[in-house]
Image (cartoon, rainbow, N blue to C red; front, side):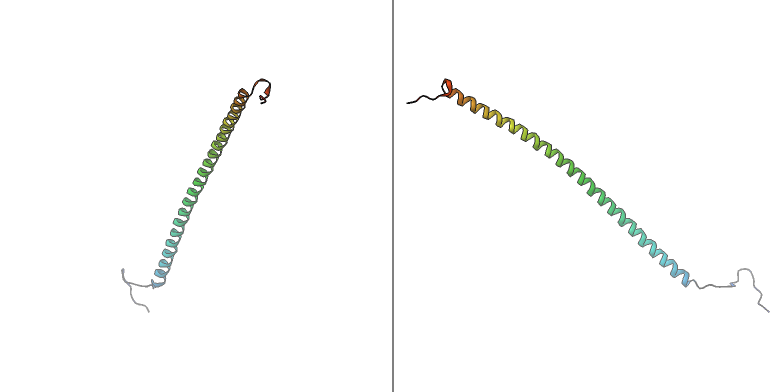
Length: 103
């Protein structure tokens, strides 16, 4: 026959070693996953900043090209005006009829 059991007596005692090992392994896996998530978020922030930098550089390049085009137009107008002034100056120095006096 069996032994009489009173309330509070230990009837069965399980070995917690395997459960504790599993818990430690799950905690380690969780910490590893948390680290991977943090790394992925950091990489996403870096990519977003790199993308923003690329957009800003592209905008700068567009504005720089517009300024260069405007500058070239202005310089061409100035060059054309200078040439007209040189022609006008040369025409004023040349006698009427476009012939130079022969000596």
